[in-house]
Image 1 (cartoon, rainbow, N blue to C red):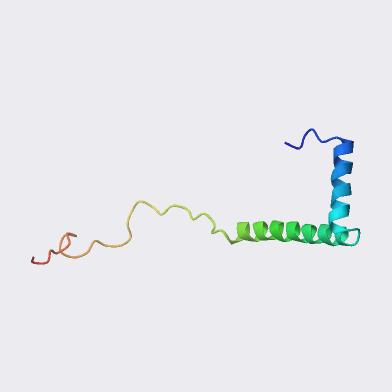
Image 2 (tube, rainbow, N blue to C red):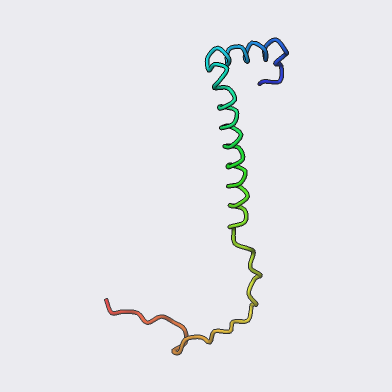
Length: 78
């Protein structure tokens, strides 16, 4: 989409930004965008560290004895 921007198009965009925001606001806007990107990257890094680690699968042999009475649930009278 923006691959065909030449020098003149970029210069025109910068001129429009200068006219719209003024010379004093452009560095503030750039700094706030930079802080936002930094915070976004930090939150992605923190979210990746908070994910639970993979737990190895349990062995197939059950260590819990079956319930008394054959393991079938008792049915309630209807």
